[in-house]
Image (cartoon, rainbow, N blue to C red; front, side):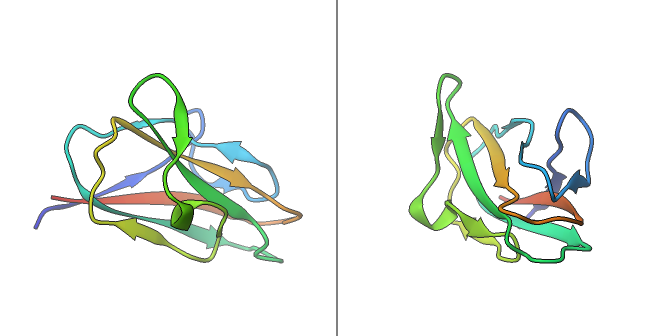
Length: 109
């Protein structure tokens, strides 16, 4: 099995400020993959931030599934397929005051 890790960014920059809401740049997914998403975090004080996986086929963005909506920043999500063209993460700080986040998308084929 081949594995690829992709650091998701905002406007091309990584290590996002965990005290601010953000949406990552869209990531083009060209094949059907087994996938996982985790947040590499540093310096969080409250761990109250939450994220939602969003997908698109090029027109509208949709929340992916219930289990990938409002996920605690300290938790990871995964699934056995990714049949969408685009993938991104929407993060809500929810009162987090410090720290950085780096969302990492892992694709397995």
